Image (cartoon, rainbow, N blue to C red):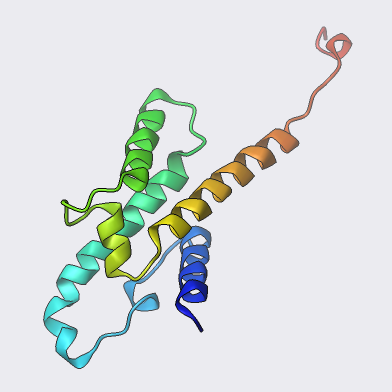
Length: 129
C-alpha cells in the first residue's frame, strides 16, 4: 500500500471511528519503547482535536461554536514551532496535513448537506393548527 493510500485509509478510519487506538496507526519498533508515552500523548492530542472538530462542526450553541472555531483554527493553521501543532502531529504520524484537511472539509460539507436534505418543509397552511 503506498503512503497516500495509507494516509487516506487512516483519515477515513479516524473520521468514521468512535474510538481509535494508537496501535491502529503505528507499530512499536524495538528501539521506540522509550517513546511510547510521548507518542501516546501526541496521538491523544491529535485524536482529541479531530474529535472536537467533528463534535462541534454543526453546533448551535455559542460555547460549541467557540470550541469549533478553536479546533478549526488548530487544524487549518500551519505552525511548525509548536510541538503539538496539527502539522507537526501529522508529520509524526506520517499523514499529509492537506489530505486530512480535505477529508475534514468534505466530512463537514457532507454533514451539512445531509442535514439540509433531512429538513422537512410544510406548507404555510399546515402551520396554523
